[in-house]
Length: 89
Image (cartoon, rainbow, N blue to C red; front, top):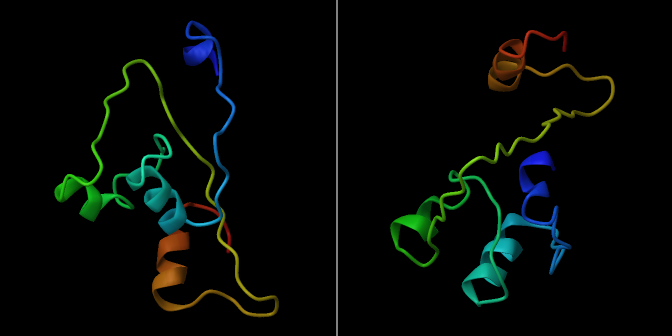
């Protein structure tokens, strides 16, 4: 928010889509720019179907949550990943 204040603050979203695939498709069809992780855009960036635009002075971050069915504890790789967070699973 603060980093964008000099540019008029946050813009209203043009579209709100429910999947990464839908967001990428909308950007590829020319609907407008999108903000997704480089990991999600790997193929599109390497094939140059979408281009990365550097943005200076803006730190984008998001909160991630792990969820699993009640009564079950994460096991295997999921448990290992959660152990890296330093929180109890």
